[in-house]
Amino acid sequence: MNVQELDPRLPLLQDADLDGKVVLVRVDHNVVKNGVIHDPYRIDATIGTLYNIVERGGRLIIMSHVGRPKDKKSGNITVEESTSIQPIVEYLEKKLYTKFSTPQFPVDNKAGIREIDTSINWHIRDLRAHRIGGIYLPNTRWFEGEEGEKDKRVRFTVQLAGLADVFVNDAFGSWQPHATTCDITRYLPGFAGFLMQRELMNLKHVLEPERPFLAVVAGAKYDTKIGPLKEIYKKVDHLLLGGVIYNTFLCAKYDIEIAGVTESDINAAKELVRQDEKAGKVVELPYLVESDTLDKRMEGAFRTICTKDFKAGEKYGYLLDIASESFDVPGVADIISSAKTIFVNAVMGFTPNFFEGSEKLDHTIDRNIQAQKLYGGGDTLQEFKNLSPGLYLAAMDNAQYYFFTGGGTVLKAIEEGTPYGLEPVKALMKNGGKNQGKGLGAAIIL
Image (cartoon, rainbow, N blue to C red; front, side):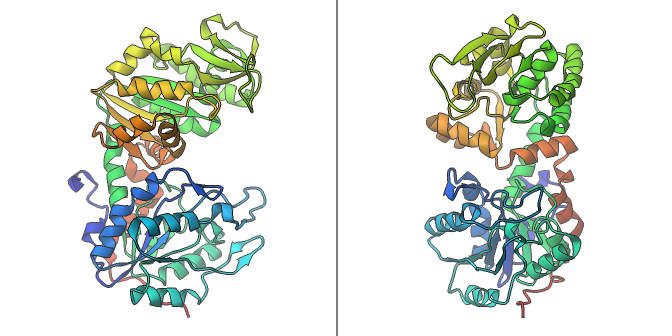
């Protein structure tokens, strides 16, 4: 890893004094769904940072968010097993052959965990005495102060800072400016972990790509991708769309109606259609799978249709996948095979019932042996692994592939035009590790 490629203002883990220090590490271990880990890749990607800290004499306190336990409308935080870090702890204990302590704090029915109470003292004493290998705090989004109002947020951040001497951010996938990703750098000397460094360096391939540059983007809602799509469109030579994003584009282009696509999204997509009439970057995937039902795959209730048969004013059912033959069309196949850089943030079909499009896309990309292939996003990687496990394992050891741990973060960096515009990265650069020794110094809560 050539750290000279990184912005010199970014404080790096390898420059931190860790010997005998308690190190608070923010990771993105958000890999649990309904209490089960489906793919541990994002956990495994942080092992190097965790090992390095311990090997250099540091004592670990780890924290991560899991899911979305906060209701956006009411603001209530639900603390329940489905968003617990316990499966992650059990995985790490087996992986690292050590014991992690998991503190329990009082829970309010609406506010979640209001504060870190004095019971943490016993855990920190065990940590310092090497009776445990580390502490894994509860889901950060269970805490009222993680995304709370100013006073609650400050109180939570100060309590966190009182646990440790040093802060390390290795949570590339957590780009939101929350207490545990940004605010904490005001109170503890902060450093970028090895995963964070690696992700920032690989973003260069997306932001300064070797051409031709092909991006593949899909999503369940068009409006959430408008900003990144505009910036991606400027950078790419060719763009493949999938999912509801592609359906929305087709509605705007052909003046048709597709089940599940809103009028507001269609209006928003018209700008991209107008732009593409001149630039011609969007590569049309002509064969689509139309289904009469959304929740299941019923024999006789789905069929392959073609965009050349679209007529203005017509209505269509749910378009739930890109038919695999779309990737054999010469205009599509040639563009994929000739690309020098390929970025994929896409599940092409409505899985698990409609998966052929994603499977064919991955295998078609793999046949391009000259391109740098960058995949981003938990769902994207999960489907890659599920649909083509052999190819996925081979790609993990292939230098031409790189798997980002946060697809949304990559899109945000593209929107910003720089990886150093991400709020947690800016916080590290602003407050920085150069202030080491000026933190709160692991002042155990009294």
